[in-house]
Length: 234
Image 1 (cartoon, rainbow, N blue to C red):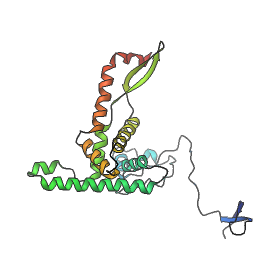
Image 2: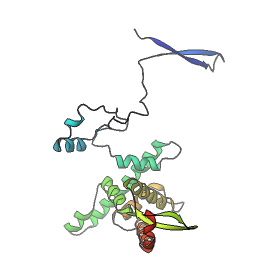
Image 3: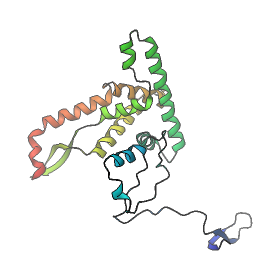
Image 4: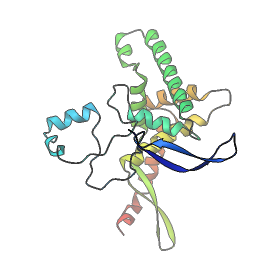
């Protein structure tokens, strides 16, 4: 028999009276937001599990407590963490369904454009160079858009210097996605977001376009300010 716990009072819209809503204890349980430091993150991707089997590190995790996986963590072949990250960056005001539909339409445009290029290609070598998978185009575009260096403002003697230095992988990925979306939003009102985003991804995948130019300009600035690199350690 399920025991009931009594929740605080809630106002009923029909009777305008306060009432108590009984809820079963074994319905849903929220995932804790924090765990002790010795809890390990779950390994839910099959590729990562295969690497653990090859390196014989799987036996070390047998007796270690593991955090429960989140809702979005799945081993499905259709799950792509990078695509989900891009969708979250596109999303505004919590409208994730709209953001997902925009990204999917951009993938459709990429597929259509690449198929047209494939059929227009005359030789087999040109056809082999054309990538038809939109997700691989996205991965290649973000990889080409990642900066390797960044400028950090450091104040010395009342003067602020732009000091070049290495950038972390997480920050580099964030800047690549941010620059792609900024270049997409700099469009005419007659052009829709999926169309412009598809063209920006194709340009970045071919190592051309606004985002790649922005990355190269940042590297040139870091090269020009290399005389201030010693301020990082002072």
